[in-house]
Length: 235
Image (tube, rainbow, N blue to C red):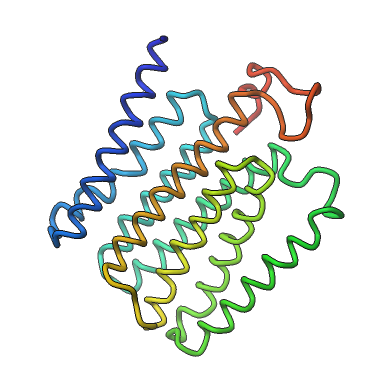
């Protein structure tokens, strides 16, 4: 095992431990531990994907997630919007990476009906939330959720791991959005938000990372680029 592989394994283990500690602190009501561990999750995951050979832009996407995690837990309304913007920037990074790896090969002829389903789900969810959201949150939530839906749809082409990550991201942020709209929440709602979020970021990031380190585009058997060529792609 190479030094980079050992580092990646240690960082992935650290991410798993941090996630477990954070989730346990949420259930125990240990606010200080929650606030200390939440901002640490994505930098550790970013370190893992870099050590595992992923492009730098993937780590940037995760660090934007860290920015959102940190700002959202301040409780400040203005910083909440900045945090949402940080998450949105992360999804833009994901979309760039997903598009490079063949998220939209050959146009949308075959994926058109599925895209229409995702678009209808986004529109229906926003329409339901709209009356219950504060006026200053309506457009930011609609715009952010559109980016999130685009990421989840794009991830479907990169295999089951990335696809699961995209769907879990939708679930996590949908739970968060219903809280913003003051809908009735399930017991331990923040626990479920963070469980699905941490799993989503790992599955999506690792799914994207695998397509880059494998050096091939999904569905392009026999036409794969080498890992060196992939790594030379500007990020």
